[in-house]
Image 1: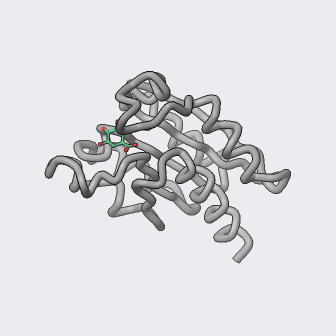
Image 2 (image 1 turned 180 degrees about the horizontal axis):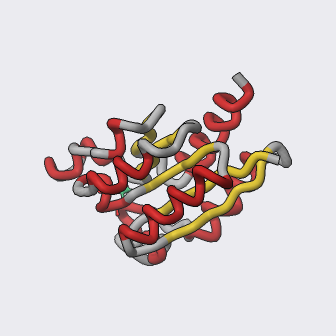
Length: 144
Ligand code: DHK
């Protein structure tokens, strides 16, 4: 069965408690449940979160061996990390970038994404439902 990695960057361990007016009250456990529902027995989802750039890079390298697709919310590393972009460029399968908030309505520095230069689709502003949409889209790309 295909495996899909759901990767999450810094501060997303605090999802549900952190700035709920921006990021909502759902937790990362809720995100995992949404992705598992979206996979609906067609793939297995592995949700991972780290506050450390190098750990995210190591998981992307691991994904090249173990995963068919990647959903990634790089959080603040979206706007800063050439290293994450380089790591994603080593991965051959579909990559979907997710932002819970509508980053383009926020500060200018959030309008820049290095990861978008690799992502096959970008979802922003759907709240945590964006993760489920991204997971379903990966499944459809794998089917195609
Ligand atoms: C999450 C973060 O932590 C921010 O640094 C990004 C993103 C936006 C989100 O909307 O999920 O700028």
